Every structure is written in C-alpha cells, then in structure tokens.
Image 1 (spheres, rainbow, N blue to C red):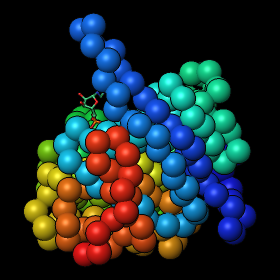
Image 2: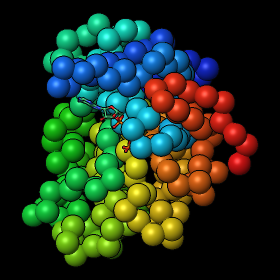
Image 3: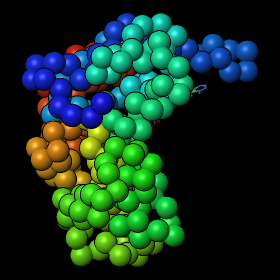
Length: 236
Ligand SMILES: Nc1ncnc2c1ncn2[C@@H]1O[C@H](COP(=O)(O)OP(=O)(O)OP(=O)(O)O)[C@@H](O)[C@H]1O
C-alpha cells in the first residue's frame, strides 16, 4: 500500500452502486446506480442538494460503509467484498478524511494533532515523524502556529491543521465532506489553494462535497448528484 498509482490507472472505480437504508419500517433508496472513476492527482467535487446522497457515497468510497449492490474498487482492493477490518486497515494507511467541523482534539496542539495521525497509521517510521509533521504544517502555511491548540486558532487555521493531519501518513486519497462550509469566502479560498498545493506536491486525489458555486470552479471535474444519481453538470 502507499506509493504511487501508475499514470492512466484509476485510483478508484465505482460501478452500478446502490445503497438503501431501512428506517422505522420504511426503505429509503439513497443511491440508485452510481458509476464514477477517480484518477490520481486530481480534484473532484460532488455537488447536490441536501439529502441527495453525497455523504452516503463518500462513506462508501472511504470504506466506512458497503453498497447493497455494485462494486467499489480502491487501488485494486474490492471494498464491496472486503470485511470491516480489512477495509479499516486500508483506510488507515491510504485514505485521509477532512470534515466540516475540523475534528481536531482540543487539548492537543496543532503539532500533536498531526503527529497523532502518524501514530495511528503506522506507515511512516517514528524517526521521521518530526520532519513529516513540520513539513505538513509548513505545507498548509502554519509553520508559525505549530504549538497552538485549536481554540487559539481561527476556523480556517483549524481546517488547515485538519488538512495537515489528513495528509501526514501519505494517503493517495483524501475525502472531504463540506470542508469549507463553516468558513467565510476568504478562508474557504485559502483552503482550496492548500488543496491545489497538496495535489501537486503530495500527488493525492481529493474528492470533496460542496454547495458553494464559487468553489466548484476550482475542480478538475464535478459530479452532480440529483436524487441518488449523477446527471451531466451544467456549465458554470
Ligand atoms: N444510516 C442511515 N440510516 C437511514 N437513513 C440514512 C442513513 N444515512 C443517510 N440516510 C438518508 O439518506 C439520505 C441521503 O443522505 P446524505 O447524508 O447522503 O445526503 P447529503 O447529500 O450528504 O446531504 P447534506 O448535503 O445535507 O449533507 C437522507 O435522506 C438521509 O436521511
């Protein structure tokens, strides 16, 4: 695991994926046949109304959930057939997550939050942790804030710590659910420029959800979801 996917090779392939939830005796058909391919080193966005199924799809791509039908193949691993612990192992090593509300540990400094990610993933030898943590925080423009704890930082800075944390273990895929939703437009734009930088320097693919039309312009490709299916995106 880790390493680079050959050029032209797909990082992730989703084929005919369906997902239904059963609640209070009622069936909700959330994903109704999703096909998508994510190539290495690109920025993908999922757009769609609230409830259209974006988070459900991100959870499937990240191996947190499994489809009822269809295939999800991440770097040759058939997520739809693997057991929970096998998907967890792949996820821990090769996927990074970013959330709307940052998900940092409040009592740890920025440095310690990023180090925790290395401690959990076990992909990088301990002797390299210090250098890697400092490199990642520098990459997101926070080399002067490494000792600060989350409550001493702005929302945009906290989200950039979360990005450093998500890339520290050198994943090939970053999944981000509404990463700019809590930020004003200037901070949102900063986050997007950090995303571009890490795609170039760390050779990751990012797949994120957003509602913000100005942010969609930065994407290499937009998947537009309506009621559990993709439609052709309109030109913006
Ligand atoms: N575990 C679950 N059990 C039952 N219903 C679920 C579950 N997860 C999602 N749903 C339902 O699936 C639908 C799609 O939810 P999802 O969170 O994927 O939408 P979304 O497009 O991400 O919305 P938002 O933009 O508001 O985050 C919703 O109707 C939701 O209530």
